[in-house]
Image (cartoon, rainbow, N blue to C red):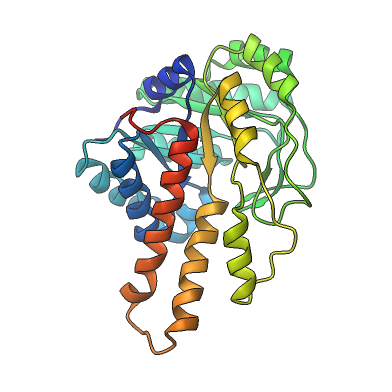
Length: 304
């Protein structure tokens, strides 16, 4: 069933767990996410980026998500991830999304406030919650890119929420976007997160939270990919962040790795395969496993 993100995230923060937001671009990714949610009895957020919309169109992505949500009793949120273009955010609000994000983090602070407030007003008029972002994550993923982190200021975050009325806020505490990240694991600024959580009572969102699973990286290297030093956020850091107050955790890179690893394996082991279902089916199955692991980690299993 399709639901609003707001009550799910409020409940998650109040009870000390987080809900995973998993990006999808095609049918197999969406099927994997929903199958995992059903198996774990977990609420779930299925997200589309501006890049996904350019690839598959908003209309087709919305149609797929609505059909998938209607076919399950699991609470499903359809979320616009990193809406940097206000017009796309407005389109999503009117097209059947049950959660949207406006990412004005790359704009000057004052402009971010004004645009976020304007979009919050429109979203609330349509009973759609809006996630905002303050601070910048380094890395590249779809249409989102930055060369360095600009960590979120706790006092400014409190002021930003008061001025805009946003329903949740994505913060920068040391995570990064994309697979090509940095050597070693991410080192999160937990003291900063504690200060934010003490001042901010709405749900806090952690972007760039993929662990970039080492076994998937090793398999990718085995089948010819060259990812270099691709590492992400370790499980203990995720658990600490959730304990402090994070209620939504975004995952994209780990699903991409699982998808392409499984596809490479089939093509390597079965070069005669030409049926797309034979090639993409194992990718769907591996992504389902990854999503289930994340839901167990986040503590959302059994919370549907």
